[in-house]
Length: 223
Image (cartoon, rainbow, N blue to C red; front, side, top):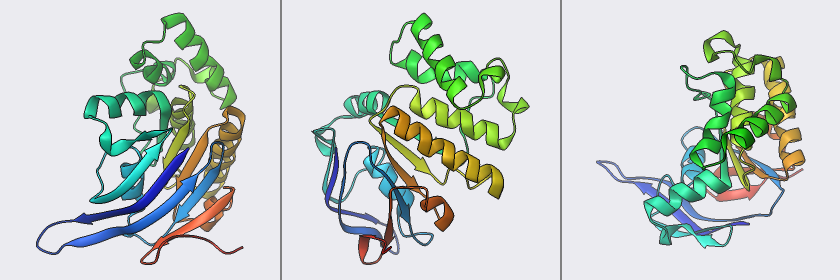
């Protein structure tokens, strides 16, 4: 479903900095994996490359049968909209929209009819335990509730792949544990594959397996 081959990325400047070098990796449909590593090793860069938000210097990314570097910006936008979901540490909910409207947004952008979009958003809201907050504004919610909104929005379009970048970094330990369990449950219920980038060994333990990203590439963590 997702294959990376000899993927490399260097940031050019007064001091060139290579953050990824010859990364090989394969993810099957329905798998949920965690990627750990020290700050600055390229974890977020890797997610950006997979999402088509950045381009590698060399190597190949094939997602759902499509080679990303052959797609133009419009095709990449459509691919992200229809096949990928995102959960971020900073939530990125829109403050002028209600919870329900925030979750409906990806469906609206995909041209889903209002009635269907509303029903799908309400269904995922119930799944994450926020159906009673549908009409609330983001500023009325706690950090844990905002992250649940982010998870619901990331999954409402039934993506093939969910990318989560430090989704519990702004949450306390108890709330973070609840969010990670919710994220895993929703991935398994929807059949989406998931990639979790995290500094936390406890967070990584919720995934099916863990990889360590470092100077030696991306390697599976020993049990």
